[in-house]
Image (tube, rainbow, N blue to C red; front, side):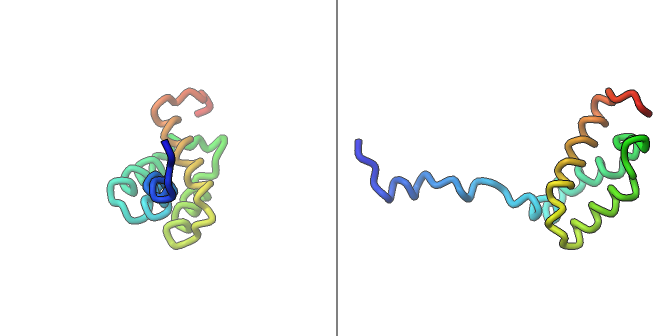
Length: 91
């Protein structure tokens, strides 16, 4: 079976990845879930994290510093996992 250029265009998935910055900032459900993680100080043990800096990163991101997306994603991941499993035993 021969594949034409039209077929290739039909299967283009470049647009399937979300723009996370838009999702986090504009989608109320995502933002609420993320803010629940960020507001849980127990999810970010002070022995490891500067909680004030975490809040500064989130607010800077919301105010347009999209270069912080990696940090935002990393903190969401750590905070959510630590909230669920709290396996660090440092607090």
